[in-house]
Length: 146
Image 1 (cartoon, rainbow, N blue to C red):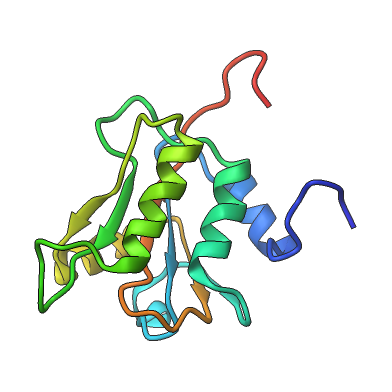
Image 2: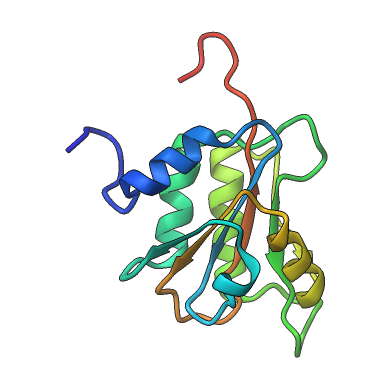
């Protein structure tokens, strides 16, 4: 075991996070998401919620601050102007870990699928809440950080 690293981050997922470069994206998706269809690399996180996984990753991985937006969620099909409750939770996590610099950008369902297809990796969780999907864009560590 390693200290300060959430045990939901498997060795495979830690290796992927390390391999990712600046500007690469990682998708954290719910149990209903077609991850195997969409993802280049898929890591399963059975028994883990999407918000728990997002928190674990955000503690380790800086968000890209060279772009306007670094976190994207799926819009609700039935009410596209309102964030799903889980997406509101994601937004709080993103704001906390970016010191308020970022929120989340809602993206239409099929456009979100297209974004996932270009992600470095997809983490499929056991999340059952609908719209439990987020994409995070990796930033850089600056001298003296981390």
